[in-house]
Image 1 (cartoon, helix red, strand yellow):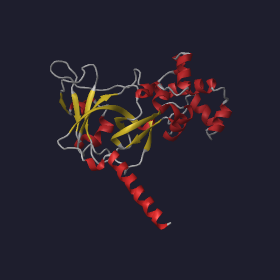
Image 2: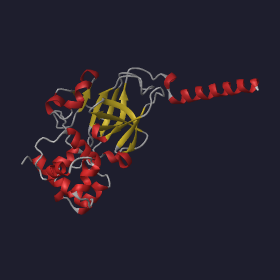
Image 3: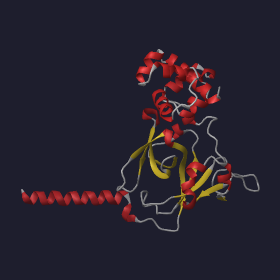
Image 4: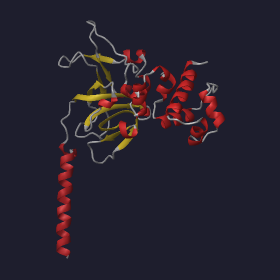
Amino acid sequence: MNAYISHLASNLKTMRNRANLTQEEIASTLAITRGKWASYEGGHAKNLPVEDLMALSEYFKLSIDTLIKIDLTAQSDKKLDDLFAGNDTFVSGAKLRVLHATLDAHGNENIELVPLKAKAGYATGYNDPEYIHKLSTFQLPFLSRNRKYRTFQIDGDSMEPIPNKTYVVAEYVENWFDIKDGFAYIIVTKNDGIVFKVVYNFIGERKCLQLHSYNPVYSDYEVQIEDIVEVWKFVNYITNELPDERFSKQTFMDELREMEKRINHMKSKLT
């Protein structure tokens, strides 16, 4: 039996038993037949549809990677309790998330540069050593050698006053539960690629991050953790342009208040 199918089968049985459900009950909840569930749990489903995997992942609040790669029967009761509470090890990254890096001639980790021309391929090449080794590299002596950094060139005006085509230096985040509300991060996603946003952490509540732009023209939106492949915390940025004050959030709010005052003044004259 394929190792992935074997892990999935035993994991489904383990999670069902811990939820104290029968095969009939869980099949009914997932809107599938008992026979189909039995084939999954028995390891007889050779070609499991992606849609079914996603449904199982959502139901048990576990990443697909955990369902098919981790043997839950070998985990302690405390670990399983953590998983049931939403603390998936694939979210925390413990011993599971591999980051490929490059070294300089002295054995120090480089800062790899992901320019705009390489941005499109990064979401698929991030885990490919050959792709990473083709990136340009440099060093910044004022950064800690005990942490991993990478630089991404951003585009667009969603984070103004940080200018378009700025180079953002960021620190690798292994444990996504450490993401702090209101701080800026580079989020690498499967669907949208590289985005630079202020982040609010809702992993514990609804398995997602809320992304916010400095530029008030752009609305907040959420990205599910299943779509995220890497997270990097903002450290610094490099640009040859001065920030444009016109697009700062404070300026926008001041103009909005001034407009509200004028409207109220006009209303008072009409009454």
